[in-house]
Length: 372
Ligand code: V47
Image (cartoon, rainbow, N blue to C red; front, side, top):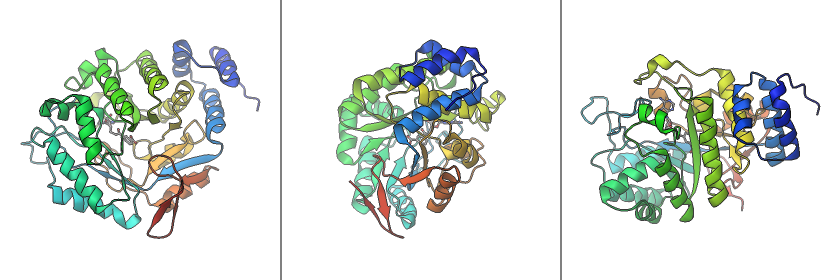
């Protein structure tokens, strides 16, 4: 298909994309600086359709956040609370197992489990939580803990990252979500999340998880104080690790939500930037199979449009979401399976329900089968 490229700086990028050649740092910066969203989107859609045709993936999942007590107190975050904050909560093991079961009515295939860096909950407590979930919901995939949580648990248990991941895997972790990566630039990290592991440690922890056979996702938090170069460098660092391990399944760009954070003055991202981050990620991350338009963060409306700008996944039913809603998200906290189907079909795409490892799922009203 012919496309009009208004921005002349994008012509060499288009040539590379059409020839299936890898883009470099300069191409990435040109893509981020261009206002020619249709040209950027055209290229991203080309790659997206080459990889996935018309298919769009979604899953039936439930988020489980056992505690919002967090010692890190990152400026970017509205979710983490101090233990003495009257609004802070920590569920007991029984509560975790009960809450997780509330998603069961929709026959969820995945629990997405993340939480604050709690100063008292131990690695043993988390392992018991995982074992209890596996016992009660053996069919459900446990996608649990960011690299940041693993780093903190390792430090407190006086174990290495590898030993900690081995313990968590043995207790039931099947794969890991992509959070906590934020932006790898040390300059920015020092301001927005100075108590977290640094970018190099995040990447090393992900490498170790991949070496242990755990698939993981990866993310980038944008729309705060990072530059376009910081974004490109972040994406290229993920691409480099992926060349070595192949362990990343999906990349999810995350728009910064400033409400109730220490960075409220920054303001929200625009629809233009949200779409562009999906498209640039699809173009630079040639070795990561899936790009997710997380509807909770983007709104279902923008996520739907993203399906024509590089995204092939729209996440899942979620059921209960705290991280973005504490930071002012006005989206609903859940969509039903039928809502996701409608959004995808109305974008002219073919919905495929997947499990966490992207195997198609076939279901009746209350049960599911993974088609292998
Ligand atoms: O790690 C925290 C980010 C992440 C804010 O792997 C914020 O499938 C914006 O990682 N504004 C958690 N972002 C969410 C996440 C995720 C979501 C959906 C799917 C997957 C997956 C992963 O949210 C955190 C942090 O990067 N975050 N606070 C905020 N105020």
